[in-house]
Length: 230
Image (cartoon, rainbow, N blue to C red):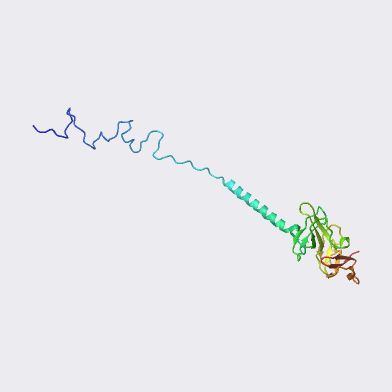
Protein backbone atom coordinates (compact mmCIF):
# COMPACT_ATOMS: atom_id res chain seq x y z
CA UNK A 1 0.00 0.00 0.00
CA UNK A 2 1.64 3.22 -1.09
CA UNK A 3 1.91 6.49 0.75
CA UNK A 4 -0.91 8.99 0.22
CA UNK A 5 -0.04 11.78 -2.17
CA UNK A 6 0.87 14.79 -0.02
CA UNK A 7 -0.72 16.94 -2.66
CA UNK A 8 -3.54 14.61 -3.36
CA UNK A 9 -7.18 15.22 -2.89
CA UNK A 10 -8.35 16.40 0.51
CA UNK A 11 -10.34 14.20 2.73
CA UNK A 12 -13.65 13.43 1.20
CA UNK A 13 -12.16 12.72 -2.21
CA UNK A 14 -12.68 16.23 -3.66
CA UNK A 15 -9.74 17.24 -5.81
CA UNK A 16 -8.27 20.72 -5.46
CA UNK A 17 -8.38 22.99 -8.44
CA UNK A 18 -4.93 23.78 -9.66
CA UNK A 19 -3.67 27.38 -9.48
CA UNK A 20 -4.52 29.49 -12.49
CA UNK A 21 -7.62 27.58 -13.39
CA UNK A 22 -10.93 29.25 -13.81
CA UNK A 23 -12.85 29.63 -10.61
CA UNK A 24 -10.17 30.84 -8.22
CA UNK A 25 -9.08 34.14 -9.79
CA UNK A 26 -11.54 34.21 -12.67
CA UNK A 27 -14.51 36.46 -13.29
CA UNK A 28 -16.83 36.50 -10.29
CA UNK A 29 -20.48 35.79 -10.70
CA UNK A 30 -22.47 38.55 -12.46
CA UNK A 31 -23.18 41.45 -10.15
CA UNK A 32 -20.71 40.39 -7.41
CA UNK A 33 -17.47 42.26 -6.84
CA UNK A 34 -14.34 40.28 -7.26
CA UNK A 35 -11.60 39.80 -4.74
CA UNK A 36 -9.46 42.50 -6.36
CA UNK A 37 -12.24 44.87 -7.41
CA UNK A 38 -14.10 45.08 -10.71
CA UNK A 39 -12.36 44.01 -13.86
CA UNK A 40 -10.96 46.62 -16.20
CA UNK A 41 -13.63 48.83 -17.76
CA UNK A 42 -16.22 48.16 -15.06
CA UNK A 43 -16.73 50.60 -12.18
CA UNK A 44 -19.44 51.05 -9.63
CA UNK A 45 -22.15 53.50 -10.63
CA UNK A 46 -21.15 57.18 -10.26
CA UNK A 47 -17.41 56.52 -10.50
CA UNK A 48 -15.06 57.01 -13.42
CA UNK A 49 -11.73 55.58 -14.31
CA UNK A 50 -9.88 58.83 -13.30
CA UNK A 51 -10.53 61.57 -10.71
CA UNK A 52 -12.95 64.19 -12.07
CA UNK A 53 -11.23 67.12 -13.79
CA UNK A 54 -11.25 70.41 -11.81
CA UNK A 55 -13.84 72.93 -13.02
CA UNK A 56 -12.59 75.27 -15.77
CA UNK A 57 -11.79 78.80 -14.51
CA UNK A 58 -14.41 81.37 -15.50
CA UNK A 59 -13.56 83.20 -18.71
CA UNK A 60 -12.55 86.80 -18.24
CA UNK A 61 -14.53 89.26 -20.26
CA UNK A 62 -12.48 90.62 -23.13
CA UNK A 63 -14.69 93.68 -23.20
CA UNK A 64 -13.94 94.31 -19.54
CA UNK A 65 -10.22 94.04 -20.19
CA UNK A 66 -10.46 96.46 -23.10
CA UNK A 67 -12.54 98.92 -21.07
CA UNK A 68 -10.13 98.60 -18.18
CA UNK A 69 -7.25 99.45 -20.52
CA UNK A 70 -9.15 102.43 -21.91
CA UNK A 71 -9.84 103.64 -18.38
CA UNK A 72 -6.16 103.45 -17.54
CA UNK A 73 -5.30 105.40 -20.68
CA UNK A 74 -7.86 108.06 -19.79
CA UNK A 75 -6.35 108.45 -16.33
CA UNK A 76 -2.86 108.74 -17.81
CA UNK A 77 -4.10 111.27 -20.37
CA UNK A 78 -5.73 113.36 -17.64
CA UNK A 79 -2.52 113.33 -15.60
CA UNK A 80 -0.43 114.34 -18.62
CA UNK A 81 -2.83 117.12 -19.56
CA UNK A 82 -2.80 118.35 -15.96
CA UNK A 83 1.00 118.44 -15.91
CA UNK A 84 1.16 120.29 -19.23
CA UNK A 85 -1.49 122.78 -18.10
CA UNK A 86 0.39 123.42 -14.87
CA UNK A 87 3.68 123.96 -16.70
CA UNK A 88 1.99 126.51 -19.00
CA UNK A 89 0.27 128.28 -16.11
CA UNK A 90 1.42 131.80 -15.19
CA UNK A 91 1.82 130.48 -11.64
CA UNK A 92 5.07 128.81 -12.79
CA UNK A 93 6.32 131.90 -14.63
CA UNK A 94 8.92 134.43 -13.59
CA UNK A 95 10.20 137.83 -14.64
CA UNK A 96 11.41 137.70 -18.22
CA UNK A 97 8.91 135.02 -19.28
CA UNK A 98 6.32 135.86 -21.91
CA UNK A 99 2.59 135.16 -21.92
CA UNK A 100 -0.26 135.05 -24.39
CA UNK A 101 -3.40 136.72 -23.08
CA UNK A 102 -6.62 137.46 -24.96
CA UNK A 103 -8.59 139.41 -22.34
CA UNK A 104 -7.45 141.61 -19.47
CA UNK A 105 -10.64 140.91 -17.54
CA UNK A 106 -11.48 138.72 -14.57
CA UNK A 107 -13.66 136.46 -16.70
CA UNK A 108 -11.23 136.29 -19.60
CA UNK A 109 -8.99 133.45 -20.60
CA UNK A 110 -6.09 132.84 -18.26
CA UNK A 111 -2.67 133.82 -19.64
CA UNK A 112 -0.63 130.98 -21.08
CA UNK A 113 3.15 130.83 -21.08
CA UNK A 114 4.61 131.21 -24.55
CA UNK A 115 7.97 131.62 -26.20
CA UNK A 116 8.83 135.29 -26.42
CA UNK A 117 9.43 134.92 -30.18
CA UNK A 118 5.92 133.54 -30.71
CA UNK A 119 3.68 136.17 -32.37
CA UNK A 120 0.96 135.26 -29.86
CA UNK A 121 3.24 136.15 -26.94
CA UNK A 122 1.93 139.70 -26.52
CA UNK A 123 3.16 140.54 -23.00
CA UNK A 124 6.33 139.99 -20.99
CA UNK A 125 6.54 139.68 -17.21
CA UNK A 126 8.51 142.66 -15.90
CA UNK A 127 8.08 141.75 -12.23
CA UNK A 128 6.29 139.07 -10.22
CA UNK A 129 4.94 140.17 -6.83
CA UNK A 130 4.26 137.73 -4.00
CA UNK A 131 0.81 139.08 -3.17
CA UNK A 132 -2.04 140.47 -5.27
CA UNK A 133 -2.27 143.56 -3.06
CA UNK A 134 1.21 144.86 -3.86
CA UNK A 135 1.66 147.71 -6.34
CA UNK A 136 3.86 147.44 -9.41
CA UNK A 137 6.99 149.64 -9.52
CA UNK A 138 6.22 153.26 -10.30
CA UNK A 139 2.62 153.05 -9.12
CA UNK A 140 -0.13 154.42 -11.33
CA UNK A 141 2.32 156.47 -13.41
CA UNK A 142 3.89 153.31 -14.85
CA UNK A 143 2.52 151.73 -18.00
CA UNK A 144 2.21 148.14 -16.72
CA UNK A 145 -0.75 145.95 -17.41
CA UNK A 146 -1.42 143.60 -14.49
CA UNK A 147 -2.65 140.09 -13.87
CA UNK A 148 -3.55 139.16 -10.28
CA UNK A 149 -4.47 135.89 -8.56
CA UNK A 150 -5.97 135.74 -5.07
CA UNK A 151 -6.70 132.82 -2.77
CA UNK A 152 -4.44 130.03 -1.60
CA UNK A 153 -1.88 131.05 -4.22
CA UNK A 154 -1.74 134.84 -4.33
CA UNK A 155 0.49 136.83 -6.66
CA UNK A 156 0.51 139.71 -9.15
CA UNK A 157 2.26 139.96 -12.51
CA UNK A 158 3.42 143.35 -13.78
CA UNK A 159 3.28 143.10 -17.56
CA UNK A 160 4.86 145.12 -20.33
CA UNK A 161 4.14 144.96 -24.06
CA UNK A 162 6.24 142.31 -25.80
CA UNK A 163 7.14 144.29 -28.92
CA UNK A 164 10.07 146.05 -30.48
CA UNK A 165 10.59 149.29 -32.36
CA UNK A 166 8.80 149.22 -35.72
CA UNK A 167 6.10 146.73 -34.64
CA UNK A 168 2.44 147.58 -35.18
CA UNK A 169 -0.43 146.50 -32.93
CA UNK A 170 -4.17 146.26 -32.86
CA UNK A 171 -6.18 146.46 -29.60
CA UNK A 172 -3.57 148.86 -28.24
CA UNK A 173 -6.27 151.37 -27.27
CA UNK A 174 -8.70 148.71 -25.99
CA UNK A 175 -9.34 148.64 -22.25
CA UNK A 176 -9.67 144.84 -22.08
CA UNK A 177 -8.53 143.03 -25.22
CA UNK A 178 -5.04 141.61 -25.51
CA UNK A 179 -2.58 143.18 -27.93
CA UNK A 180 -2.18 141.62 -31.35
CA UNK A 181 0.78 142.14 -33.65
CA UNK A 182 -0.33 142.99 -37.19
CA UNK A 183 1.38 144.25 -40.35
CA UNK A 184 1.70 148.02 -40.33
CA UNK A 185 -0.44 148.07 -43.49
CA UNK A 186 -3.32 146.40 -41.66
CA UNK A 187 -6.22 148.89 -41.41
CA UNK A 188 -7.08 147.51 -37.95
CA UNK A 189 -3.80 148.69 -36.43
CA UNK A 190 -4.18 151.33 -33.74
CA UNK A 191 -0.64 151.55 -32.42
CA UNK A 192 2.87 151.71 -33.90
CA UNK A 193 6.02 151.60 -31.80
CA UNK A 194 8.04 154.42 -33.30
CA UNK A 195 10.76 154.31 -30.64
CA UNK A 196 11.75 151.84 -27.89
CA UNK A 197 14.52 152.70 -25.44
CA UNK A 198 15.89 150.20 -22.91
CA UNK A 199 17.80 151.30 -19.83
CA UNK A 200 15.71 154.45 -19.44
CA UNK A 201 12.29 154.95 -17.89
CA UNK A 202 11.60 158.55 -18.91
CA UNK A 203 8.89 159.81 -21.21
CA UNK A 204 11.13 162.64 -22.33
CA UNK A 205 12.95 160.23 -24.64
CA UNK A 206 9.86 160.30 -26.87
CA UNK A 207 10.21 164.04 -27.58
CA UNK A 208 10.68 164.78 -31.25
CA UNK A 209 8.86 161.61 -32.38
CA UNK A 210 5.36 161.09 -33.75
CA UNK A 211 4.35 159.33 -30.54
CA UNK A 212 0.98 160.22 -29.08
CA UNK A 213 1.29 157.87 -26.10
CA UNK A 214 4.17 156.80 -23.91
CA UNK A 215 4.54 153.58 -21.88
CA UNK A 216 7.12 153.88 -19.13
CA UNK A 217 8.30 150.77 -17.25
CA UNK A 218 10.62 151.33 -14.25
CA UNK A 219 11.66 147.62 -13.98
CA UNK A 220 13.34 146.74 -16.20
CA UNK A 221 13.81 150.35 -17.24
CA UNK A 222 12.16 150.68 -20.64
CA UNK A 223 10.28 153.41 -22.50
CA UNK A 224 8.00 152.77 -25.47
CA UNK A 225 6.88 155.63 -27.71
CA UNK A 226 3.66 154.71 -29.49
CA UNK A 227 1.90 156.46 -32.36
CA UNK A 228 -1.84 155.86 -32.29
CA UNK A 229 -4.64 156.74 -34.70
CA UNK A 230 -5.87 159.52 -32.42
